[in-house]
Image (cartoon, rainbow, N blue to C red; front, top):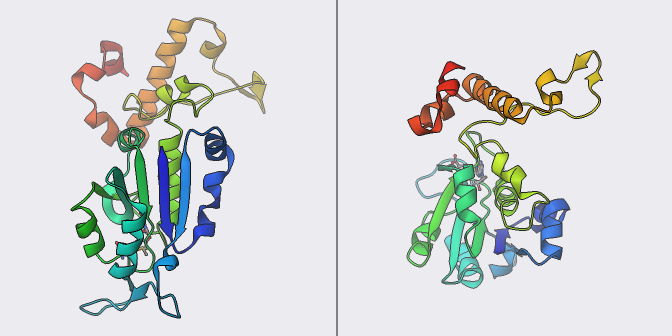
Length: 239
Ligand code: SAM
């Protein structure tokens, strides 16, 4: 998979080369390009923004600069992902779909965002998704790209040491994952639940499922509402 990020702060994307993502690059599982948007400016100030039409506070990123940048970076096989608080919420389902893509291009906005015509124009040639990572407003799209890339890349075959962990994570079965424990058996008077030390795997599976249901009920009841009848068994309904 190839990932390209266009930004006015290339240094902000350094973490893409660290830890799990860095190892995925070293092993040839992903290729990452980070591009400075100002490389497509021609004026002495290397300006990327201008005042908004219609007035109002802040500045808007210029279409000419973004248009040329995307013309260079995108191909006919790219999907353009635009982080914006006004976008569709990013979910694990989207991360799974993105993990199937050949080429993702991320356009990091700053200020009040990017001139809308950049995306309207790009959409004539490629799929374009305007995506939000949550109901809050960041200063720029770079942190959102780090979040999305990490969520996508860990799903690629060969990236995680144990692929089963991704299958059992929160959201994989529509629920939040329950609590986890490791040694020692008792820590600061707090014991590990007996069932996890029982060796009875049927009981452990049931306990984990119940914990996941309870946690989801308390923290994310909206997820439970989205589960279909077929996703729940009789024991689930009793929890
Ligand atoms: N005026 C925009 C609005 O109200 O929708 C907010 C612009 S924000 C200050 C600047 C940039 O940060 C956006 O263009 C986007 O790239 C990024 N950003 C901010 N919040 C985000 C979020 N929740 N999800 C994804 N990107 C976000």
